Image (cartoon, rainbow, N blue to C red; front, side, top):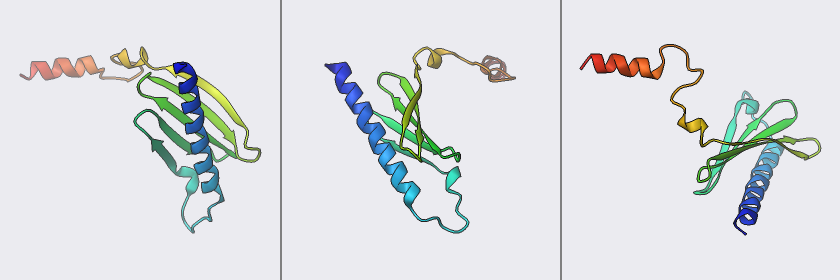
Length: 118
């Protein structure tokens, strides 16, 4: 039952984000205002939805469930309205990594320098 409710909640969030995104796409363009660079966000205590205009006729919607630490990415074809699930990822283990692909100096090196200054 809980999984079904979560699925319905995600579905409603995506539908709301799609509605807002498609309605926004129909809005008149203002001179000098680049809408393709604008990102939008909608959130509730249970869900966060981020929308990004891909500029190639599609919109990307990222839905994050902070309680379950899961992220899902959808692509929406603006011409057809088709929605495609692109990826889902549990972030629990990602968020436990101290540093990854962060370049130099690593966070532990900075911490060591800071401790030497004391």
